[in-house]
Amino acid sequence: MEVKTIAGAQLNVSDDGYLEDMSQWNEEIAREIAEEIGIELTDKHFEVLQYLREKTEAGEALTIRKVGKSGIVDIKELYKLFPKGPLKFSSKIAGIPKPTSCV
Amino acid sequence: METQETIKKTDIKEKKPLEKVCIICAKGSLEDVYATLVMANGAVMEGIETNVFFTFFGLDGITKKSMNHLHTATTGNPAMRMPGGLPFPTMLGGLPGVETAVSSMMRKQMEALDMPPVDEFLEMITAGGGTIYACKLAIDMFKLEKKDLSDEVDSIITIGEFYELCDGDRTQIIFT
Image (cartoon, rainbow over all chains, first blue to last red; front, side):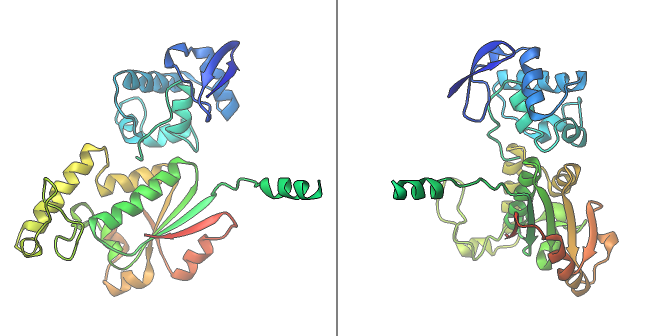
């Protein structure tokens, strides 16, 4: 675990850069993490991020299949929003822990 | 002092992440095909370029009429257990209908873990940019045609063409 300054806030992050405490998250932090990955966030991105955060709060394990059936995006669109890391990058930007699912 | 310098230099290992995987599926049981699909989808999700090559009995995994009804072997499978963990008698596995029942039970358990049926799994792989191929020799041998295969199959290729797809020094060929 290390401390990182993101969007002016001192945050605890894992070795891979995932926020340790998802309640410290805000849209500014999301934008800065996304920029580091190389993604510019749109409203559609935020809809997905919100969905991921809600499901994580409810204690559900996330898979791209679940996101694909959320009604927000299909899997193809999800890959377009978060290229090369549909679940990994989206989770990181959403301030939730690194995904543990294999699908 | 000099030795210390040498140690330092050898300690520095540049990380070389995988850039491409080429996965071969040659067997058609439920677990063999799913091993291929999970590895392929996992690679696509990691941003790794992914080619999947189905050959011999593995073709069942991309043939429309068989792909969603794959079986797991209930005879000759020493890892097979009864619900509760007791050994599964081989004689029982040979009875008509047992393999079908066990296989459908396994599919249900996988569904509970959000593992999709084969047709949907193939769609997930191609949605992320993975490419699926069928082996020409095996297609000819089993007298199949392109129209018998899932729409997610890109094309029917020879083994030579498959090797051409495997170029690059950060490429791995995986035989499941």
